[in-house]
Length: 55
Image (tube, rainbow, N blue to C red; front, side, top):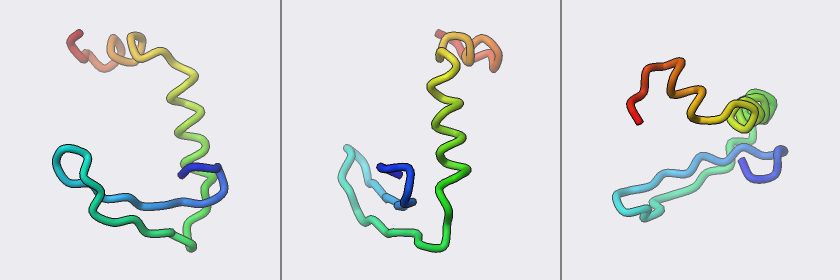
């Protein structure tokens, strides 16, 4: 999702080589927008502590 309007599935191989991309017209962006907001709302260090992720 690039513009909070469309959902695009992107597939990559090793070393960030893009294999394909597909516009998912049947999916609304609402859940992805919500997840994106959550990721910027909580610093990763706090998330890591909550989920016991080593530094």
